[in-house]
Length: 500
Image (tube, rainbow, N blue to C red; front, side, top):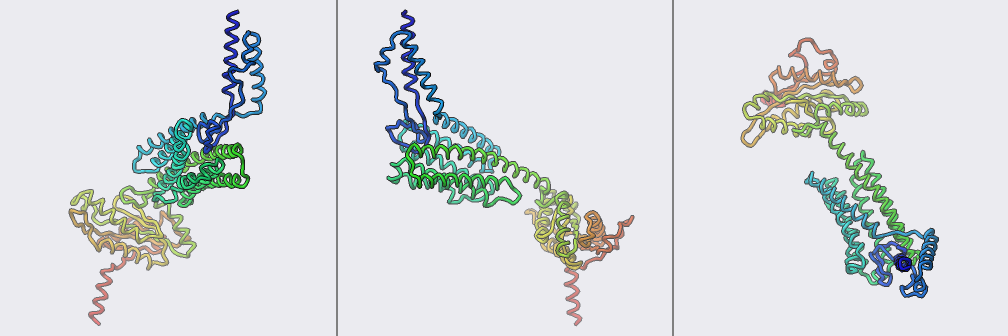
């Protein structure tokens, strides 16, 4: 009998405890009414009416059967009521988000440590860190002062959006814009107004407006400098635009409808769930954008000469079809120019390989400026090539001679020595329809061989007929047309002037 009474008393205590803990939790980030026992700005807790511990009906349950019946009745009643009630634990939700934000912040900081020069991951990590800290302060509603939980906590969370904006700007190596700070500024500018600070619905509207501002800033940072070939960035910008419209539409709907506090909490809860879903998609697309940029960077490295920064042989040959198409559309000819630095081995032997690298870099930087509409690259060693569209043979001669004369005009300075470097040039021409890359390169190579045989530091050009002819079994040192150098032309003009 004593065991039954003890069991009955335990049943009564259990029933009272269960009834006291039964609650419906509604979420929102701004409700601060003390009489509702809010745990955080995102939570409004309304407890069910429960029996007091000294209730007479509870005191009657002293015997075993009556106590057991009371417990069973309580469970049946609450089971029926629970069928139509959705219980959401906002504290658990905030804890999950804070842990996820801190984890993502740690991952971003580790990526930043791997490449310290890239500030993008640092700013993104700071964004997740601020978001986690801000929502942690929101979750401590009721345990810390209200100004820390509501005003400052939400401001810190919105600063996370600003950090994300700066991260997307740093992704394109752009400077920080003033509008990146708008989300927390909008919140701080309005939350201290009396008619906003003291009204739950107005705080909901203000936060949605600040969040819409942040989403708009993110869309601007993503789309304003997006390359045309990065489709994922357009999709990412569209997600931020949708998020901005969602938050702005929620704020406008609440301003027009004028909902009660419970209805405003429902508005905020729906907007928060939709925003979380969009943020998940945004994170996935951001990873895709980073992957595309990495692939683009690796592709560029595979097509670029690491020493001079111009195209390598593979990258240069890949541009020939585009040059040929441009020449065909504009009714022009295709010219291939081969350059070979004269006595480059002597430069390396006398001044060192580092000085030779400087000579190669100076020539590549100078020659690339004269072929803006074409393609210029390094074939290997001290040999370079250019693909260009020209009107006729005269324009091809002028282009080749201009590059040769400009390079040998000023000696190359390596800091310790002055190197008088020169270059020989071979040119081959063909019409846009008949242009063949391999044949033109072979003809330009024969012209370059003839230029070296003619004494170096000169230009030899093969016209359409010579370029189309098959290469001879033995190189002909007298083939091609030796182009008079600019010095020769100036000297000839002076002699004509003196004779006249």
